[in-house]
Length: 157
Image (cartoon, rainbow, N blue to C red; front, side):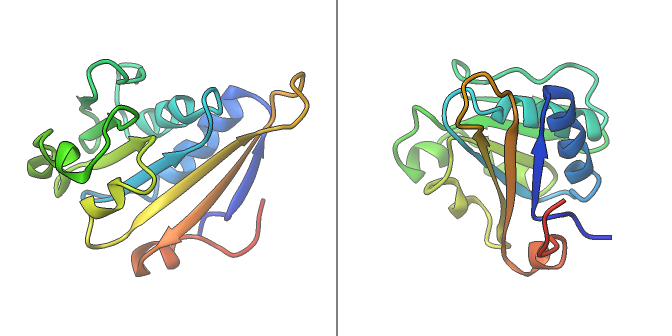
C-alpha cells in the first residue's frame, strides 16, 4: 500500500503518527528532505520517523551540532542544514560514509541536500495553518525519483 501524497495533522501526535507511516517505507540509503518555515514541525516529523524506526531516544533539533546519528532498526542521520551554504560544506560533514547504510533526514536542506543521493529523495513539505490559533499542519510528500514515485499515491488522505 502506498502513502498518501498529503495529510492534515491537527496535533503533534498526529504529525508523528503520519511520520511513522513514512518510516515504515524507509530503507537504508533513503534521503528525506524536510522543508517548512520555522516552527512548522520539521523536528516533530523527524521524531515520528525516529520512533517509527525504533530509535529509543527522542530526536532533537541538531541546529548547533549540525548532525546527529541515532540507532534503531536502521541508523538515522539527522542533519540541520540551516547554517550550511554550499554542497561542499555539507559534504565536509563526512556524512557520505553513513548514507548508504542509513536513513538521512535533512532539515532546511531543500535546494542543497538533493545532491547527497543519486537515487532521488522524498521531499516532505510542512505548512502551518494560516490561522495562528490553529495548530493544524498540512504535510505534502513529493516524490523525486522512481523509488519514491512507486511509494507515494496521487491522492491526499
